[in-house]
Length: 109
Image (cartoon, rainbow, N blue to C red; front, side, top):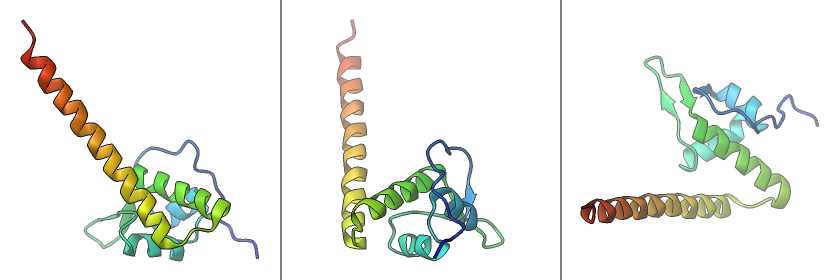
């Protein structure tokens, strides 16, 4: 069965996307996106009218999930682990850079 959702995510990186738009961009069905939102793997923001939006990082994450699903058919637990580790690595790299900046500023003559 063919859906109207295509993987066109390679260069999209601006603004916020509503759920349907994120589905179109990522090639993922909106109900599947809801699963990842409920699992906390992808985050969304709501406006004053209750409309939810997914930011560029979230849309990119959906695209990565879609690529993983097509390649390996991983379970939700695997996807959650991959992104938890990725998030931790990014946080650690930021902390390391902050420490390097602090050290270099202390040794400036």
